[in-house]
Image 1 (cartoon, helix red, strand yellow):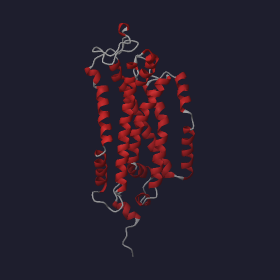
Image 2 (image 1 turned 90 degrees about the vertical axis):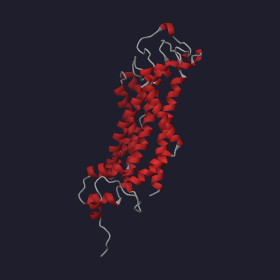
Image 3 (image 1 turned 45 degrees about the horizontal axis):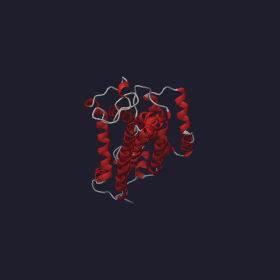
Image 4 (image 1 turned 120 degrees about the vertical axis):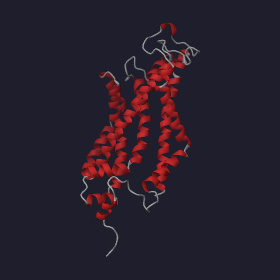
Length: 311
């Protein structure tokens, strides 16, 4: 009789929620695998630069207004369109608002929306994708066709339609962006679930009576965490960029709310008058923020590839 452990015995030996061990039984187990990820990420200079840049942008947006006090509620028509000076390091806009102060306040909404959209979209996509991938068959086919139908909707027309019938709010922007951002996450996580479903540790849990919610929540999702984290990082960058585009198109938060996209939209009306300071600072902040999150996402993806190659 063979001494190899049966799937039922294997399931009993694997604690619930344990991430699948790399093949070959590497020393250090899961901790060793994620240690490789950390060290590979720490050696990626662009990823570290992205983390540092995100931290600086967050400090600039949230702590900056506590140090650099400006009035963002009342217009000052005696200080309109002033060039950068000692009193206003980045000049003023057509209403007399200080550009530097508006950059700080506008960045708060950009980061808040980006992080909220990434969290909501990732949560929806993970649940939807793992259910579709684990159940498979007809249910999977129907669920994925729903995703395809939503992806086929021209988003630009949807945004223009929403801008004409709704008064934009922060919550509405988050809901709209989240409802269109989870689709990619769902596809990626579904692919992970399809790959993990026939694995021995999943079959073992099923044989000992493990139900679908337990298998999905304690085995499939933890083993897909790398893909989820990387995609969530890119979701933040995409949400910030789309928010700027929406604001530029007119689907913006009403005054006195400030957004980088709104500053960019307003500033383009005065660019040909030589008031460059009303356009380029906001544009630079958008580009830097998106690039920083993309650097971090690329670094996480490369680090996780190192872990997979060591399996």
